[in-house]
Length: 402
Image (cartoon, rainbow, N blue to C red):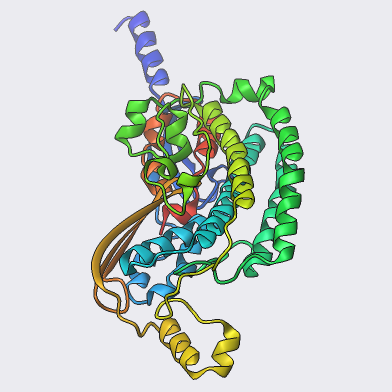
């Protein structure tokens, strides 16, 4: 072997040398407890494998041993950044099974709560994306605004993060005057604060250079992997459950579905930003057109009676006990209902055999669907681009592992 051929062979072996890198499960870049094992050549990712299940809590199996009323707190722990959407989606699924018609006022109140949750979720996603590119100030500003949303929820249901808000049949209580005041104050003050946040990043040359072109997704790729929500719309596909299959009176409101063109990290950021503005518009419309009337359905077999009646009325006490303990049989049926969660189509597939709990319940979590595509998206990308792209996908570990 000549000296030149030895040199070529040595060069080939050097060029083929790769490193296996564990991104997670405790790496701060993972945004939750999950793991990506990637093979890298320098800074470039050649291939990878995703690992899930680190916080699997067997919610679906637990739900088969709980009455419908007691499943709501389980849904809180899915996407805990926008828990009320999970709650409402589950309630609407049970209502579809039971044939309960919810009054318009309750539907509008649900829309207000769900759109606040969408705003809170998008604030977290986009502000943390800023942090991952080195911009920390916007995150601090937006967490202050998120606190104001939590304060509104606190007035409505007494909780802030895992809300357990609403009930099968409507809302557990009407909004009080303080809740309406805080809501009006938020609608007045938040747009200015959010505009400042946009000014920090939208036209920031450093942010644009770090996000534009980072792990782009084509419409064909997104559809093949079952993408929904902002990640699908960023790829150019105009699909939103609120429009395609309206629920909770969404057909009463005028709003635009923002759609991207390239499906890259910057587009995902921009789609969520615009959705925040659209959510503000929906909330404003719901407040202005808020109907009078009851805030829950007339369904005493499934809707908890007021507490004051439970203390003084035997029939109310009996219903309260039977509902809480799950002693009312549900009709047989097979139901699927979906809502537009902050991350995409959040669905509930419920099978009832006529008993007091679900025979089978499956949560269709959007994070679980599109996380499978992450390592495929990251092939050939730089590690730094893969990190910001993971942030823009907004994979929430609680929703990933039900």
